[in-house]
Length: 405
Image (cartoon, rainbow, N blue to C red; front, top):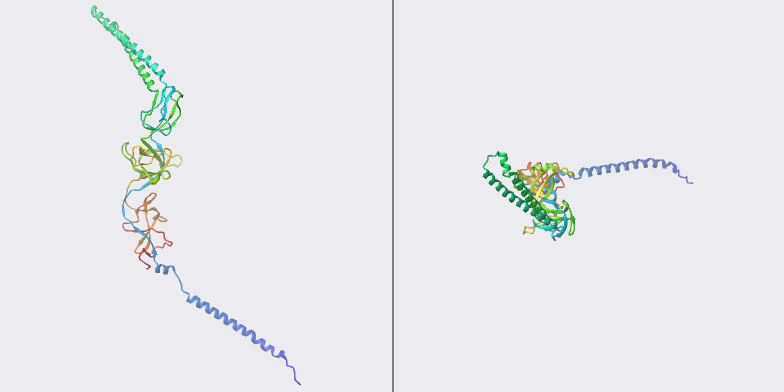
């Protein structure tokens, strides 16, 4: 007869070995993982900025500079205004009986050209009357001179001694002076009448362009009334404003006939093909501009309408704004470079022995295109002209064609 097996007697021994084996396996896995991680970090290659700079030099463009004498340019904006402008007025009154075709806004007139004519009938009659009065005064003078001659003859016949006071009366000297005075007054009246008659013809006082006309044929005008505006065509001004800090770089005319600094004028939106005009810096106006609080200067342009020029220079338009490049005073012993090559904090990048050097510079003047370096650059220095992604003093550089070093 067989006996049943007691399973509960065996299970306790298997339960004691299982957890121990699991712990050992887990511990081994952890140790192996730690060893692998340590090995990976220990054998990983490292990359440093220093190694990269040593292996690959940056490609740059350079330009050699030299010290010398350079002339800076001060660029300003200005408005074109006439140097001679008048409001035409009448010195006599009457009706306009003639108007010249040239007396039209925009047309040009020559000096002395008749623009308007006022009805001269009244002035001609007045002149005739004044001339008649002059003839009468001259006749009275001749009669008085004859009477004085008779009085002198009578006095000589008497042969008597007469006091000096009575002598002048007997010889009719006061009457003679009165007659002469009446002649002089009549002559002055004739001259005034002639002037009034001449003033019925309104003429251009100088070569000019008609800007406006305020009367026409048949208008009744009075003395002093405005008839129109004229602007001289011989010369225009450019009224420009200049920062006060740049005034000492400009050379003005020291005398009316002495030329000032040359100026190049641009009107980019109007003049085709990059055409320019030339002018001269004439005068510093002793007053600041009300809006910008900058100094006002005058630039003179001769023949602004290009009437006497065969080169086809563009005509200037009154009231327009133009760009003026004023030649400044020369700078001696400086280096001139494009102003964009001056980097932050007034530094310049230099290539020295194939390495990058950051040079501090002292700037004497800056215009719209260039910077003029007084100190910090010398003859033969090679200035880097392109932008760099990384700027580190001492970084290795190379030029086109050198290849990788």
